[in-house]
Structure formats: structure tokens, C-alpha cells
Image (cartoon, chains in turn purple, cyan, yellow, brown):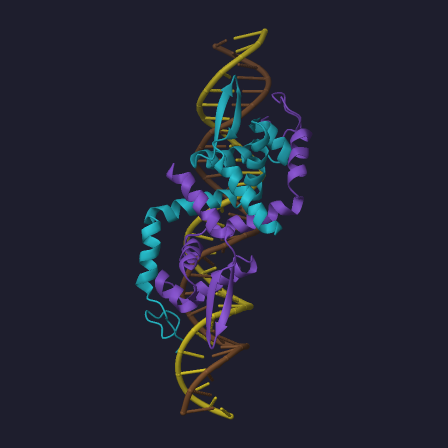
Length: 119
Length: 119
DNA sequence: TCAGTATATGAGTATATGTTCATATATTAA
DNA sequence: TTAATATATGAACATATACTCATATACTGA
């Protein structure tokens, strides 16, 4: 009978609760989910390209679509996702909506990760 | 007929190629994919908990499984993913494999994102 | 009001992914 | 060698998600 879901582990050197408390002390339970959501937003090539483009200048939906070679619908869906997580914001000028990065954290995250993979 | 996949856009203020070149100058084409892969590794609650736990101390597979309330198989699958991206590494002590963070970038990424969402 | 442009969104579909289950491998102790 | 423990891995399944299509909304100008 394979042991795959043990509650106790003979090899254990540290106590499970010690780690659980260490995590709990530095991280709220609901923050884990929010963290995952933000990283998930960055975990897609289309959205990364959008964010990296917006770091240079604000852009409208159809510009982004043309740049990415995607439909405006597809881009709009992704922008909604980024908007909901407050990673981008927009301003209206007539019929056109210009999108920009919401703050500097996003490009900071991308830069650090870039540094990591270039090492 | 709805215009959803235009190649040119009347509202465009900046040239598509300007942005393409700006992105290309700072980012290799294949780096986008690698970036997405790394963020994808962080885009899951289970993996985030593993990484956050390993920041405190090295842990073996069955400890991680017990802590997370998952099978050792599930944890092992996730550890392989993290290993392939060189986000974690391990050392063997007898039958036990102890995992640790590969470098400091990972916890740095989590900390910055945490700061972002706490603002 | 009405046509035209830009963007948003719901539904559907194909693909990706996290977990489980069964089984394989690796190390140790008898 | 054999049994036991710790970990790894392939296949299957259920769910998530990126895109497309059709349609809706918002703003502008005639």
C-alpha cells in the first residue's frame, strides 16, 4: 500500500506547525490568493507584451491589437483582467481609451525577473 | 461588418513600429516566453506556499505535503516544475531530499508584489 | 436622430494545468 | 537479497483560461 497522503512523516526534522506559523506571521491567508492572481496576470505572453509596451507610453486598444497581431476583442478581454487587478488604468479621449500602467510596481517586477533569468 | 482585426487604426497617435522597436530593444523575443514561464510558476497558491515556506528553511517533500495538506505526489510534481525553472534546488540526505530556494530573486519578487497589493 | 468608430462583453471552444491514482526508482537497514 | 521508506513520474480527469464570434455600449459628427 503506497503511502501518499500521510499526516505524519518519519523523516521530518522540523515541526509542521513551526512552518505554518512562520508563514502565517508574514502573510495573511487571503494574501496568498491575491499574490497568485497578480502573478497569474503576468504569466501570459500577451499580457506581458501589453504591460511592457505600456511602460514606454500610453496606448489605445486598437494600437495594442495592431502591435500584437490580435483582435481588439482579445486585447480588450486582457485589459479588463489587468484593470480588475489595478495593474493598468485608462483615460478617455472622445471615443478612444488610452491605457497606461497603474503604478511602477509592475515594471519593477518584470525587471527583477528579467535579471533573474539573465544571470 | 464589425472591424475587429484591423491592421491600421484611425485613432493611432503613435506608430506601431515605434513600440515594437522599443520592446525589441529591451527584451529578446525568447525572453518574453521565459518571463511568462517564471511568472506562471509563481501563479499558483500551492507553489507560492512552497516557496514561502522554503524561504524560512529547507524542507523535505513529505514535510511540505503535510504542511500543505496535499499528497506527496502532488508536491513532487510542483517541485519538479520549480526545479526545471531553477527556482528551487535540493540536496540528498539518505532517502530524504531537502529542497531550498535556488537564489534570493524569488523571495524578492514575492515581497515586491506583496508591497504592491498592500498599498 | 442616425451612421460610424472604438471598445466591451457573454457564450462557446480548444488547449493548458493541478491533482489523483497507480506504478517506478532510489536509498537504507535487516 | 528483501522489505521499507522517500521521492518521482506517466496517464487520466476536472477545471481554468485565451481566443473567436456575435453582439452590445459609448462617444462623435453630420
